Image (cartoon, rainbow, N blue to C red; front, side, top):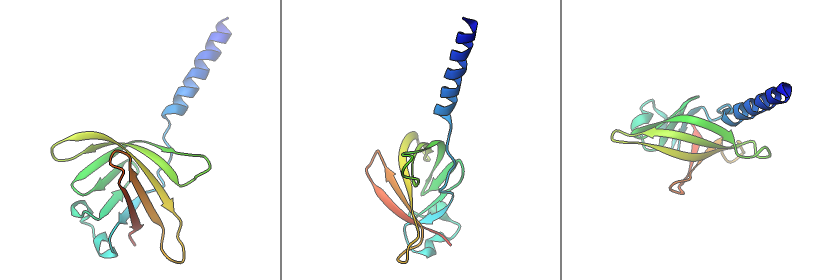
Length: 129
């Protein structure tokens, strides 16, 4: 009886650990939705630019802490859902976004596609050199 109880507790703990695990962040870098002249270091004041680190996203007049990042599908390697806690000068709010990478092609370099689930806005960025 104690063995079954212990097995059940271990199983529940492993499932919980799996549920709160965060995937690696493949989007780290400086991205722009404009031309490469917007890739200068003052990205925080530039409406065209976004900087992504392991645990944060910085963009025009706001920053967001990445609370979790999960692959959307095991089949689609490039799509991830991010849960964010964002802070502007006057407020804080939670936000869910979907990020995906589009591979480099003869027509363009690697692209980052951002879908804001609250607004429905889709933005495409190119990686800054």
